[in-house]
Amino acid sequence: MLKTFLVQAFVIPSGSMEQTIQVGDRVLVDKLTPWFGSEPQRGDVVVFRDPGGWLQEEQAPTEEDPVVVKQVKEGLAFIGLLPSDDEKDLIKRVVGVGGDRVRCCDAQGRVTVNGVPLEEDYLYPGDAPSKDPFDVTVPEGRLWVMGDHRSDSADSRSHQETDFGTVSEDEVVGRAMFIAWPFDHWATLEEPKTYASVSDAGAGTTASPAPSHRVGPYDSDEMIQLPTPAELPLVMGVVGLRRGWRGRRYGVRSWRGGCGGWRTVRTRRRGGPRTPRGSGRPGRGRRPYLRE
Image (cartoon, rainbow, N blue to C red; front, side, top):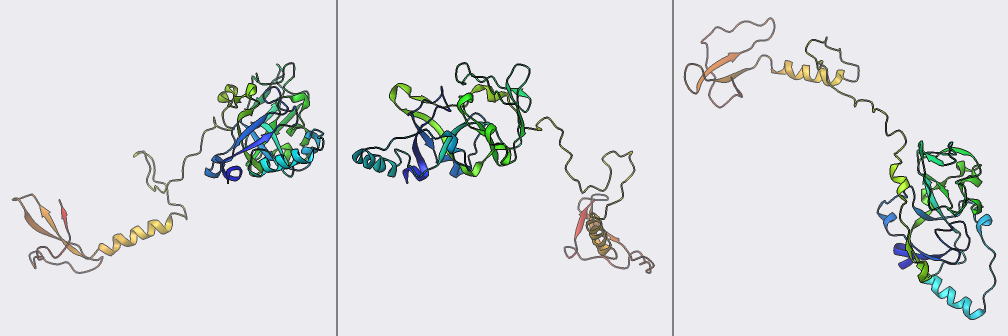
């Protein structure tokens, strides 16, 4: 329950996220909020399942542990305090989300997202944002991810032959929140401020007006636009309702000639005989009336 729905610990075996996360650090990954619809955001450090072949380039060589140590590790892995050897997971930083255009590099050698250059102060000291140029529009529901140690990270740049190098959001295990061990490395993993200035792709475009069922013009001086075929059933229904009222008579409460006075208004069908005045008075309360 702990590692499936709440928080799980992961050990970092390689230096692809240095200096943010060191080799051997234990990070705690939030697995709860994705159950409530939380999606990865730009700048998040996320753990995700191997999309296929990535881990071979990232996995550091490991030595066989003594029997007792191996059993202890298996017990800690069972309760979620250590990762299982069977789990094939990686950890990277989200640089672009669905719809983003991620490019490298601009005139100053910086990675740009939707035209906004990133000031990546979290990169490994002396590393360039990328030695390999790229220009990718991230498909919806996928992520462009990169390690903070760019010269030692086989990330999205190295796998562009498959899905443009992106990772499906469904492969994300959770967001790394804390470096929990060792104590002298303890830190929170927050979203860098550089991503706050990045807007969504197409955010500045003008949206098309919503479709309207209005038949008459908004300007009284304009000509009335004829209804389109999609509007005809609605218009004809209103016309039929109007014709259905013809030929009926109804009482009208009038404030002329005395408070609460009544007078009768009759209508007739086209071509029908006229009814002489004074030939009947409608009973009060039996017919709908209109306030004049």
